[in-house]
Image (tube, rainbow, N blue to C red; front, side, top):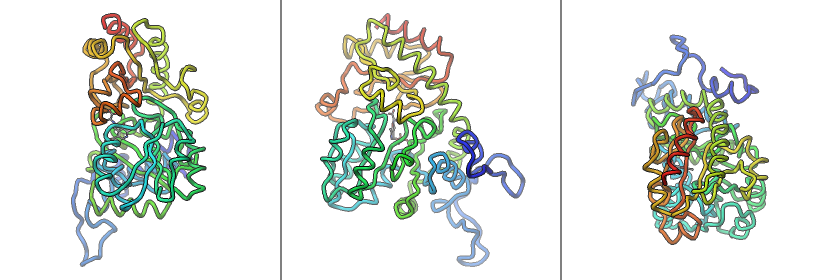
Length: 385
Ligand code: P1T
């Protein structure tokens, strides 16, 4: 077991993952069970039923909490289920201020499900700190940040927004999926809760769908844990095991993702078919200085606009050989996708366009392959686009 003051890479491998006491198994076993034998009615080991608690999930929750510097963790069957658990803690009439550029599925859940259940939302430009402050009212019960945002990679000033929200007693959630706790520490910057789609970098191998909420706030986590059990959107033990296997290598993978992405961003900047490159590591990014302060490195995600709009984008996407045309991100393999048609199609066209999510926009998740192969692949496909 890691010591409490262990550093990130050590926690990633050891936190929550002490050798199993009966056999000494170095890896956390997959406790593939729905229920647990009781000695007498109500006389159990602390494990009663696997929706409520499962040892493999316990291990993952402890591991992810340690990585975010949180006291508590709650894992879910998907990132959306984790978002849903937080939203379930709100009540009719509550108001939420959210970044406008967020994952399409998060926007859909807010706009199509929770509005119908009586919540009210204000969507503000993700990087505009003052806009969050002015949008807060007496009814505001949550601020929702995603930074860097998906897909436009805007950077929200976590510390400034949390300080403003704190003055009003409003909790702040940061979706830390794109950055991961290795690159960005929302709880240390004042956030109340951190949310992850563990499907992405935490799992890291595109073989599991999952979500998590991490926080030190006892009252909030009690509510989230209550919903986790009451609504039941929990992950399977096997998926918890796979995610744990992923987090062990998070630090080394993130270093390589960032190195590769930096080189690919430079290649894109120099290409004549590319109109605009959005990457927080480029000095041309409008929040480059904030990103350098707030994040250890700029991450593995790049968005760019190809000249020639939808037709060029289509040719580019269909011409890739090493990059795979697919939704999702954060796995070891490089992926490429078209947000307007794929991940963000659930946002109405007029809203997408108003937010700068154009038909020429392409998003890539730069993997950890040899960067020369990635560069050759992109160069060739862009030349043909
Ligand atoms: O797919 P799921 O595990 O339910 O996670 C939802 C989610 C939440 N937050 C962010 C920032 C995300 O990017 C996602 C999922 N995103 C994709 C599937 C995608 O390709 O952008």
